[in-house]
Picture 1 (cartoon, each protein chain N blue to C red):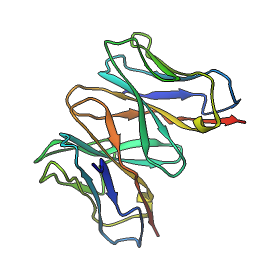
Picture 2 (cartoon, one colour):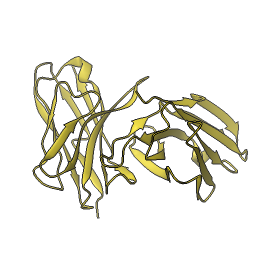
Picture 3 (cartoon, rainbow over the protein chains, first blue to last red):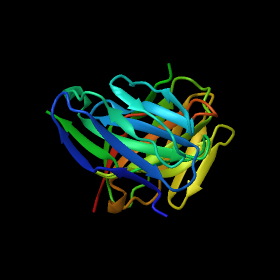
Length: 111
Length: 113
């Protein structure tokens, strides 16, 4: 039982490049979400999903896309990376509105 | 708009002290409140979850209380140890059907041997 896994752990991108951050869970949780953590800003919700095929925007969705084709996976796509997207990205899962479990994070730098 | 505030931002105590971390939120219409621990460069570890109908939860040396009407929660750590040094985050869930969390900015705790 791996829980919540995120890949890659570190990534450096150049402005304008695209990439996908992967999140996978093996707990059969309905709810999955993406947060970014920035100094002085705390954790902010980017996108979330309440089940396969259902996604919605969070507080800071601009520049990011998500899809949820399976229960297990919830990838986050950066369409055209910008320096403002330099951050640590966390994926979280939960069974309904109960306790949320976080992955180890992806540290992204955009130059 | 729901806002979550944690005071103090940083705290340094000698080993063995009992301490209290504070969390306040502006909208009392929450579904639950969760306390997390984050070690430097790591992810978040869930410590305690309090449902809106509950007043407190306990796990080992940790006790979390919730006063929804006043918009406050406290995390009490008994007999602190150097291994408790970390950032502690509180987060509220504003609804029962999304799993969304709104976070405070955290309290960074240092416990000195």
